[in-house]
Picture 1 (cartoon, rainbow, N blue to C red):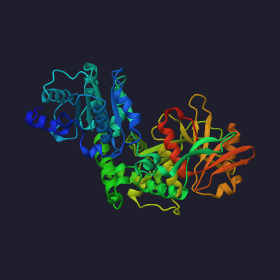
Picture 2 (cartoon, rainbow, N blue to C red):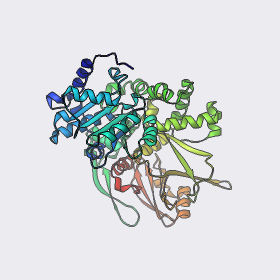
Picture 3 (spheres, rainbow, N blue to C red):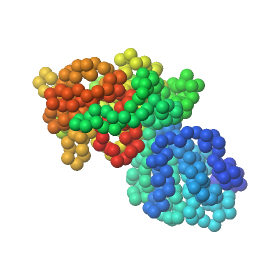
Picture 4 (cartoon, rainbow, N blue to C red):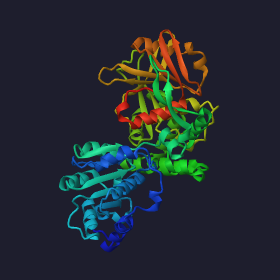
Length: 483
């Protein structure tokens, strides 16, 4: 197809998008923004040039992917990279319609009178707007081994599936999740609420990040539940006053009404929308395909596809179940579904307060979201029935080699069990069945160690627990730590 836009106009656009070619600086709008803590995890992949791979930055809408790219360019400039070796192209701009990545690279060279792109870094933002992007990118990587390609995209379903299928050995995937609670505290410059101390755990104390003022931290945690997933929302009271419109129109609707239907040919977008709303309202609940079908009025086969699509788009996370002995059940009849960020629920309905009955599920959703970057972890929950007795443990990590539980955690927004630990019958049974000597139970504001039937239960305020899990998630060596 012929591109009807004159070459000079496209080159003008490239120069506009890359102001550092002249100023040697990224735009102030980006340089003035605080870096996400994930930047330190992401940037080494940008710099990695020993392996000939493109870096694919994936994640939900509005979590700061474009900002992460600009911060990477800023750091490359500060490290002495020549401004003419750094290219940023926003593929979502209609001016690039009908151009292949190769065409765009040719124009990049032309715009600066370069013979080649050796040693250059090329950043393609919103790559999913280019049809068959993964095929084009693979060819570029193969034919330009001296050039580093970094791409980002919000239509995560397409990015995830396509990069797996087509980019074997050529792409490195990096997931940027919604803000963790630790990042929220950091962005709001509230680190003074945190100090490093010790908590009682098992036989000896463990280093942990605690709060001088648990009341203040809890207040921020509830604010995080309602508004904390997205950097722009956290930093703007104006957006918080109308978070429903901002999050719903910019994050939910664009995925449900545009991205997923165009990717998978979904005909009934209102049915998908209704289904997501149903899931969002019930985040953290256990479902079965039968009850889901009955309550939503959608056929089971369609439900399964919708769950796949929504999970691939990073809007939900499905957690499967194990029995009391942590054995995987042969037939998946029931499972839990969580939003990937609790503030998605607030956007669709209304903010929760600390006394609302939804707090339990919102807190569980928040804890799950702290683990979002660790996809390789086998997180499950345990549920069983023996005679008339039923039992459940909220969160269980299973070792994927031995299939044995590494830890179990009860996530509560209550101080009740700190005063009455004997009531934790399910957790006591689960630990006994699986040879676990200790476990974690969260509370509103109680911290301490309780011994029951030879087991040591560490009680932690859930806000403190969330902060530490977010921190552990950024530390890749600490995958199996439960607290």
